[in-house]
Length: 166
Image 1 (cartoon, helix red, strand yellow):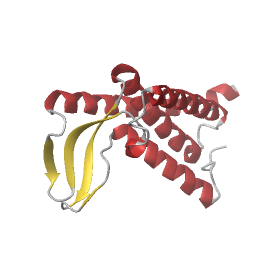
Image 2 (cartoon, rainbow, N blue to C red; image 1 turned 90 degrees about the horizontal axis):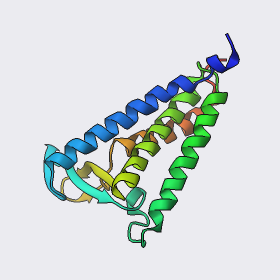
Image 3 (cartoon, rainbow, N blue to C red; image 1 turned 90 degrees about the vertical axis):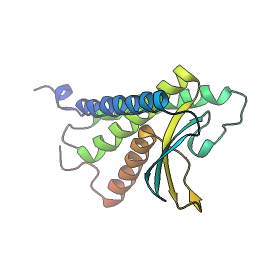
């Protein structure tokens, strides 16, 4: 079997699944919610609410004049391309590298689709504690990026990024 066939590019199927789940959930929320409308899932802890974000995490640069859309578009494309190249160079069984890369790619491209299609990102998951503390609304793509980044750091600090697959 050639080395190209043994790389981690099949992990892009996970990226595609993240994109599909992200886009499906966003379509459902946009179809069934008005902006700001909330549905309680777990009282005092978890709600669904439709929000739009023109910036990045925590509404960073949301108030800018529109140039941030193209900055975050370029970042998503660049990071996804770099991580895809990294997957091509990663052995298929090296799941401790491939899993975080695939999650980050899927999340970045899921939000990229929103930016290109709508000019903003659809957020809908709202975590809070009673009415005292609220985490900024987020989505499936944001969750994938966060989990991927945490796993990347965790596996790097554990000393065995390759995951045993060589």
